[in-house]
Picture 1: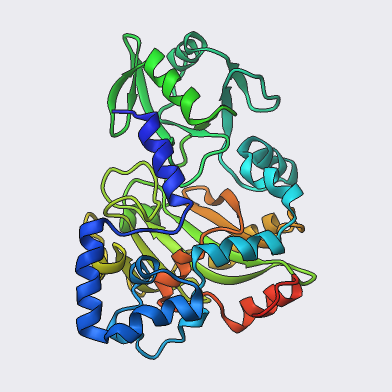
Picture 2: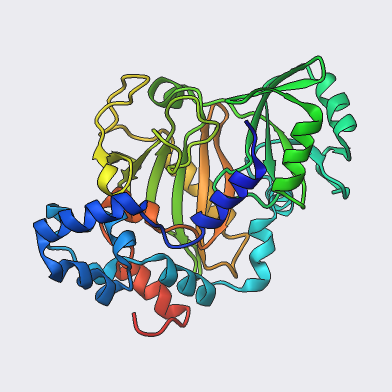
Length: 369
């Protein structure tokens, strides 16, 4: 069932340093001690400012990580500090407010999902029809002849609150993964998830490549883009691979996978799960497609689109972009104000603090890197 309190609590926790469940923490402490001794337990904390749980979830206890320089791993606390120094806080709303963000993309002529309505108590111009109540939402949905639709909070994060709407009948909306939800209940959930309102968009369809290999849910490439020089450049790339019936491809959703991409857009490693639950994957569990070695189609076009988008935000000097693989080609989904470096660290099994990222941080005024 839709539960706004639960989803808001998940969002709060995901913004903090990750933690193992108490029983898993105790088990991991024993396992790491047996494998590595007490020395390992303090090394990540001393070298990278990582707590035990965060280091374990990054997989630093694994034997293959024995030769890694832990100081190159960037924990949540350092990520927040780096992003705060590199990025102009006055530009935060341009990335955080998806209504403003999509307006900028539309004005620049860049491929992005089409917004057809805005649902919220206060009107937003340029977002299609304004839906100011559950009754207005019901009337709008009842008039639609093209399904499914996708609804997401204007200020959403981690795809929490994202809804795939598949039809309407008898005063209820068919919500993917939830079944029929009454209009009043749906409106109450949306209102609780975002005081800024919801965007209603036409659902993107996956490209034939994505459909064949990853299934019906849209998969997206996550690009870490650095903009401390005269032009933005791509530092690292991963692809989030959906599985099952999830509404989104975010890695935190159980069963979804994460893959490292090389500079040519080729998948070089795929994982499922984090820390003690992490395992490498060769084939997609639903499609049966081999994953390692696949190349993302039109890689140069995808990168060019993201870099063009990045140049709209010169004062956000560390950017993380999600680019969807759709039947209409690459589409820009969102830009993050800094973004989560853990996706790159886990997928590539290396610290994010490369020579290139360190040079970027120094250019932005970060000391001690």
